Amino acid sequence: MEYAKLENTDSEVSKLCVGCMSFGKAGTMHDWTLNEGQSEAVIRDALDLGAIFWIRLRSGKWKQFSVI
Image 1 (tube, helix red, strand yellow):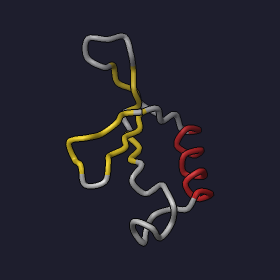
Image 2 (image 1 turned 90 degrees about the horizontal axis):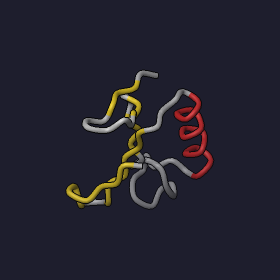
Image 3 (image 1 turned 120 degrees about the horizontal axis):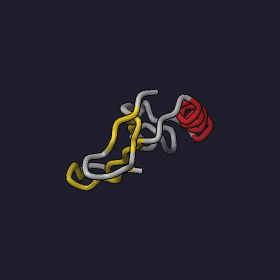
Image 4 (image 1 turned 135 degrees about the horizontal axis):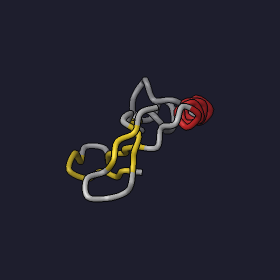
């Protein structure tokens, strides 16, 4: 995994950002939403690969987001 320094800090984040939109309760929001077990497998793999930059958007609210 490659990492980049956050500007004006000593912190680093993975260059790969994992979007969390597909994680949740399957079939409630979108047909492609992963169930809990599938989501856990993707999250585990991303962590094992060194991903430390995650983003979560509130549905329909593009200006409201969280970086985890």
